[in-house]
Image (tube, rainbow, N blue to C red; front, top):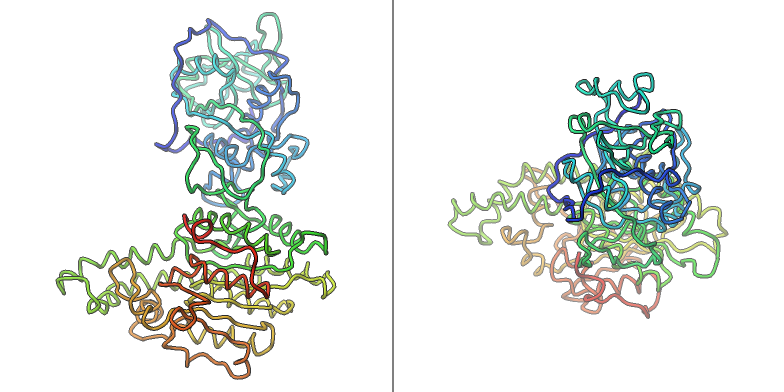
Amino acid sequence: MSSNLFTRPDSTDFRDLIYQPTLIPLRSQIIPALEFINIRHQGYEGACTGFALAALIDYFNHSQKNTENVSARMLYEMAKRHDQWPGENYQGSSARGAMKGWQKNGVCPDIDWPFIQKKPGYLTAERQRAAFKYPLGAYYRIHRRRNDLQAAINETGAVFVTAASHKGWENQFMKNGWIDHSYAQNAPGGHAFVLLGYTAEGFIIQNSWGENWGGITLDGKTYPGCALWSYYDAELNMWDAWIARTALPIKTTGTHSNSVSRDGQKSRASAPAQYQIRDHYVHIDDGIYDEFGDFPSNENQVAEIMEQVTDGDKPGNPRHIVLYAHGSVSNVKAAAKRVAAWRQVFAKNKIHEIHYIWEAGLIEELKDVVLGKENKVVERTGEISAGSDRIIERFSQPPGHALWQEMQAEAFRAFQKKGAGTDSIDKLIEQLQKMPPHKRPEIHLVGHSTGAIWLGHLLKRWRALDGPTIKNLILFAPACTTNFYNTLIYPALVANQVQHLHHFQLDKNRERHDNVAQVYRKSILYLVSQSFQKRRKIVPIMGMEKYQNKLKNAGIANRLSTYNPEDNREATRAENHGNFDNDATTMNRMLEIVIGKIPKHRFSEANHLRGY
C-alpha cells in the first residue's frame, strides 16, 4: 500500500448540488471496458486525487474514441490550490478541491504537463490554454447509498471516490484482486480512486498504484490495476463520491466572463475565469504571492507576465504599462471583476495594465466597525447626526486603528527585500533594462485610496532597484498621511524618478458631506485622520484638500497637478471617496494622462464602471 495516503474528507458545503438518480432500471452488474482503462502509477507523492480524476476523464475520453490522456499533475496541483489547507507545501487534497480545480481551470493533455516525481512545475500560459480542451461540465455530489452509486455508474460509467484505506489494500493481503475487508475496521489512510462498475459482491475500482496492483478477473479478462471493493468495506469507509461530465472545448479567451452556473443559466456580473485576466493581475497577501483560490499568483506566473509586456517592439505590444493599486475592494472576486471590466479599454489604448490585488475587504471591515458602534451612538445622542461623529471616532478607534495599521503593514511587507511586491517590480525592471531605452514602454503608477500607501512603498523599492523613470503617478483620494507623501513620494519627484504627479481629491464640501456606512457623517479620510491613524491625535491625510499646505512641493510645482470635482469638472466628477474609479470623467482623464492625448476608446459608466 502506498505510504502517501494524504487525501482528506470534504468539509460540509450546503452549496453542493446532489445527484438525483433517474428511474431507469439498474443493470445487475456492470463490467468496465478494459480497452478504455488507462492505468497509471502515482509513485511516492500524495497525488491520488489528481490520478483518480485523470482516470475518470481518460475513461470518458477513451469511450468516445479519443485516446488522449489528461494531466494528473495539473488536476492535483489545481486541487491543492482550491483546498487552501493550513500550512505550505503540503501533500494531498480533497475530492471537492479536485472537482473545483477542474471546474475553475479545465485540464490540459498529459503531454503538456506530465507527472514527474517531486517536480511539479507550474501552470504556464501554454498549459492554461491547453486546458481549454477539457473543461468540466455538469457535476454533482453523490450520496453514499449503494443504489445511488450504482445508478451513477449506469449513467456515466465512472464515479470519483475518496475513502479511508487499510492494510487489506496491499497486494500481499489481496486474493484474486479482491481487497481484504477483514481489515476494514482499522483504516488509517485516505485515498482517491474511481468506481468503474459493480457486481453482486462489490464495486469494481481502478487504482493508481500501477499495473502490478490488484488484477481482478472479470468475464475471463484480467484487469491490471483494478480490484473489487466489497460493499461492506465501501459502506464503512467511503467518504465522498462525485459524478461529472466533460464539457465541450472552450473556443474563446474573451475578456468578459460568460460563465455558466451549475444549473446552466448564465451568471450575471459573475467573476471572470482566471485565464481571462491571468496576465493582468498580481495577487499578494501578507507580503507573499497568494498561490491559492480562484485568482492565485506565483513567482513563475509573474515572470511570464513581465516578459510578455516587454517583449520587444512586436506589433500590438503595449506602449504603456500601468501598475494599478486599488483601494480596498469588497473581496478578491470584486477585484477580478474590475480587472476584466477594464481590460479591453486599456488594451485598445495600447496600455497593458497590471492590477495589484491586496488587502481585499478592508473598507468593508471598517464599515462593519462603524456599524457596530451605531447602537452606542443612539443610546447617547438619540439619533445619528453630524454631531455624533466624535462618539463614533472614539468608540471605533481601537478596532479601526488595528485594521488600519495591519493594512499599512501589509503594504510595507510586500516591498521588503524578499517581499512579493519587490519580486514583481524587480522582474519588470530586469526586462525593461534589457530593452533599448527608446523601445521601452512608458511606466505609470495609478492608485486609489489605500493604493497610495502601496505605491509609496513600491516607489521606494523601485528607486533602490534603479528602475527607469516613471512617467506619471496618478493618485485618487490618497489615504496616506502627508508625512508619508513627504517621506516616500516627494523625494521620488525631486529626483525626477517620477516625472509628474496627478492628484485627484474631493473638495472640502464633498469630503464633509460624504459618509461611512450612513453612520459616520463625513468621508472615511476624516475617520482615518481623526481616529484610525493615531489615537487621540489628528493626523493630516494627503487626499484631504484641507491639508494641501502640508504637502511639500518645492522644485516640483510645475510637475504637480491637482483636481477636484468643484474646480475641475472636466477632470473628475467623483461625488464621494469611493467614486473615483467608478466615475467615467476621472477614469478617462487618467487614460488621457497616460497616453498623452484624448483617448479614442473611453470608459463608460454603464459598460465598464459598474457591477463590481
